[in-house]
Image 1 (cartoon, rainbow, N blue to C red):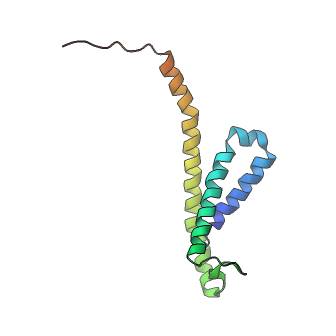
Image 2 (image 1 turned 180 degrees about the vertical axis):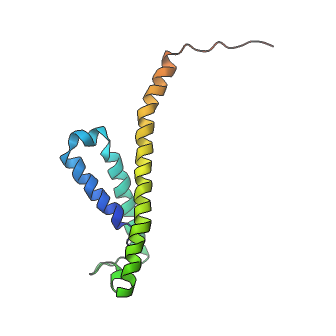
Image 3 (image 1 turned 45 degrees about the horizontal axis):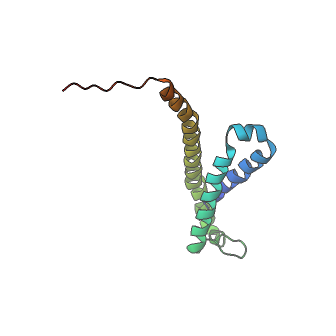
Amino acid sequence: MACFLVPMILAVTTSLIQKTARGISEKLKIWILNALLWGGVILLALEHMWHGEIVPWPPFLTAMMNPMEIPLMLHEMVTVGTVMSAATFAAWGAILAVSHYIPKITAVRAVEPPEKLSTAR
């Protein structure tokens, strides 16, 4: 219903961090996290529109039209939205780790002498 709102709040926050703290954001490659978050938010919003859970008139979320569905919507935001955000942060962390260690691995391989081929028959 509204699970995409949690990553959207994070995307807005990280976008503000990227604009204000440029030194830290360049070091941590916040642009990658922003791309992951905003891409997910856009895809989820389109999927929710496709299923009629988002409408172009207020209150915009169909779950808010019925007061009985609001707790269900909030529960989905807390559970599903938080898990999606955590998975996005984990993917970003993996991307940072790989981008940090790949140059070191290739540098070590370039320095090592090539192994001699054994011609034992």
